Length: 131
Image 1 (cartoon, helix red, strand yellow):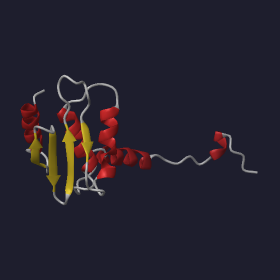
Image 2 (image 1 turned 30 degrees about the vertical axis):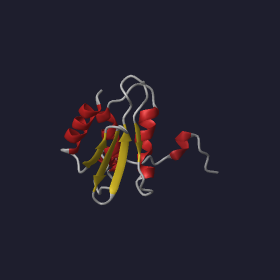
Image 3 (image 1 turned 90 degrees about the vertical axis):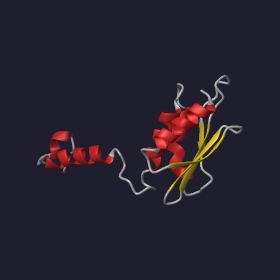
Image 4 (image 1 turned 135 degrees about the horizontal axis):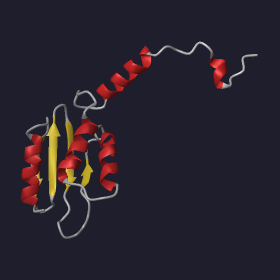
C-alpha cells in the first residue's frame, strides 16, 4: 500500500482515539503518534513489494513495555493491516491513557458469576483426606 494511503488510514484511526499523528516521513516510511499524558510510539511501514512486516516501537522507556502485545501480534503468522496493528497498540496503551482495559468488563462479569456460586461444604469428594 502506498505510504500516503497508510497515512490517511492512520489519520482516520486517530480521529476516534486519543492519539494524534504528529509526523509522517515518507522517505523512512515512519509514522509517529502521541497522546496525553506523554504516550508516544512510532510505526515503520513495509514497502508493498518487499514482504516485510510493520514494526512498532517507542523511544519512551515508560511506553516500551506496553508495546509487547502489539509486537507479539505483528510477529505472529499472517499479514496484518495498519489498522489492526494500531488497534493492538491502543489496547496495549489503555492503562497508560487512564482508560479501562477492554477485557475488564468481561472479567468482572465472570467474577460476579463465580462469587454467586455456593462453596462446596465437603471437600473430601475431591479426594483430599483430612486425617
